[in-house]
Every structure is written in structure tokens, then in C-alpha cells.
Length: 227
Image 1 (cartoon, rainbow, N blue to C red):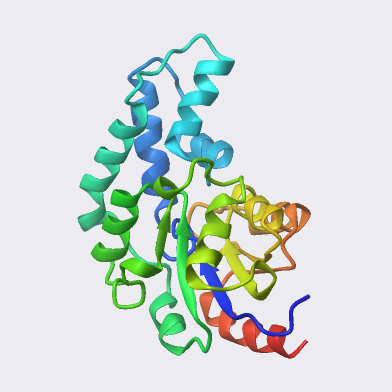
Image 2: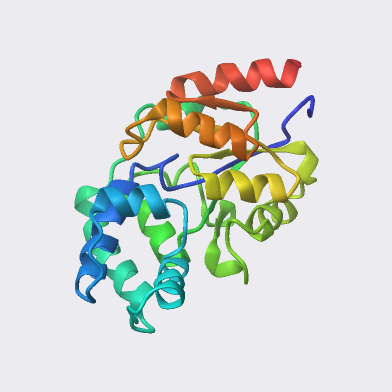
């Protein structure tokens, strides 16, 4: 365990912004147009944390359904159109970021346009200027591969063993572990209906601690850095 986190890397969807419900609804509606009938709840349970490209590849490889090549673009453009009016931050995230003692950035499996839309529309741009935003557009292999977290560490000038990641999905936690970065699991987003089960899932994936209220984070960081 590290003694001091030189960098805290936040996931975006489900950590900074409560977007998984919106994203899952859009994916569900888009899949339905091509004969794949999954509810938004089922999409969230099965695919939270995965890219839209990965969702398309899953169905093209494991079913008779052939989704269009631009499936991810359709989902992204539709989601972005809803963001200004429907997307909200997680409770207390702005207060948490305003009082955090450590350097921080965001590393998201969203592509650049969607990440920028989410950060800008929710008033988080003051905390995450462009040089502190890392999207899946920047790497060949997004989460659960370690590439995105490693890129964030490299660009921020921090060794992976001196960083700490905040993630809400098995995919994100697995990516952090693969990168050699310690990770806290967050289970306070709206799409997580069974926090006990999700907490166990994140711990099993390698999270060293789990929390469900952003007001806890600075306390946890203080205790963590003192360990």
C-alpha cells in the first residue's frame, strides 16, 4: 500500500456524474431498433463501464444480431444530446473536489466529445481543465485494459504505484489493478441498486476499500495517506 497518493484518478460516469442511468437507457433504446431487447436495467447490470464499441462487439460476436458499424456513434450522439438537460453530478462531488488535498484528473471510457460534454455541462470544468481529462479516444485499448490509467499517470508525471483510482465498475477496478494502481470502489450512483452486492464485486476485482458517499472520500484519503 502506498503511503501518499501523489495523484487521484477519477472515473467520470458513475463517479463524477450520475450518467449510467441515462447511458443505459440510450443503449437500450438503440439496441431495440436492431432487434435486441434489453431493458435499461439489464444494460446497466451487464455493460456498465464498457465502451459502446465493446457493447457492439459483444452482440456481433455472441448473437445473430448485427449492429451497424456506427452503433457507437449513434449512441454517443444521442447521449450527448440529452446531457445538457438531464445529466447531474453525483451529490457532494463539487464540495469534495474543492477540498481535496491531492492532485487529481479524470480518466473515462467515454470518448472525448462525450467526456467533454459531461464535464462542461455539469460545471466540473473548473476542476478538470482539458489537460486533466483523459478519454478512451486517446488509447487503443480502453478499460478493462490498463492503458488509459497508465496514460493518465504518464501525462500527469506520476508513477502508477503512487496513484489512486476511484472507480464504480468491475471494468474500471480491473483496469486499475492491471495498471498496478490502488483503487477505491464507489457505489453511490443511482444505477447501483444493490450496494452490498456491488461492493463485494468491486472488492473481488481488487478494490482496497469501497464507499457510497462522496463526503467520505477526503476522510478516506487522509486515513489512507497516513497508513
